[in-house]
Length: 106
Length: 113
Image (cartoon, rainbow over all chains, first blue to last red; front, top):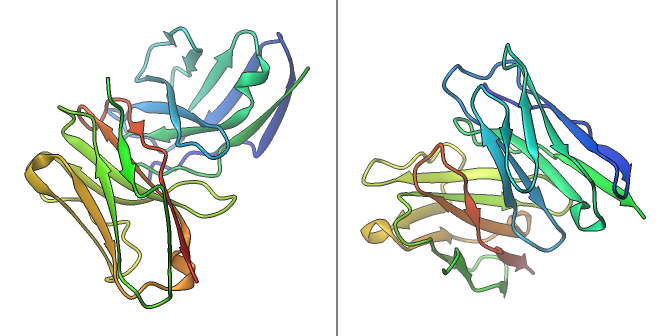
């Protein structure tokens, strides 16, 4: 069961980097790691995904551990608009936990 | 381009009634997903459609819940004999194929009185 584990909440200051961790120790070798975020009263929004290599896009970076048992979503400079609940999931099991609620302080 | 569209955005109904929730996925997306989100909780997977394959119904909580996807496009989630615990936001998402990013609609907020 490719369940993911994330901290319930994290806090950051505006314009500082944020590292959001996710453990997925039972993920299969062909299972992608996806990250989504959800603002209040909206559906989740795709952030980034990857399989083995680190990935970068305009929103964030994804660092995947060599053993694939964990990954870290990196927001290089947090803004107030980044305050949301962040979910990491495996594409195979489609199990969203409660995610990490990120608070960004001005 | 158009994103995933869900209707209605809000639905209030009495306990025991049947409800139908609709999802219009992004054109060309072969994968379609339904989730449920109760207040303050994460998303609960309900059902997944991939092309013409048999759907993965493993997340449906009871036989009162069913879903269909006609012509590989629009999907309808039906809840029969609604109960108060069915109150939640029902989210639909679609993707090109399963491993690709999911695009979510804004959900249907269902309230059972």
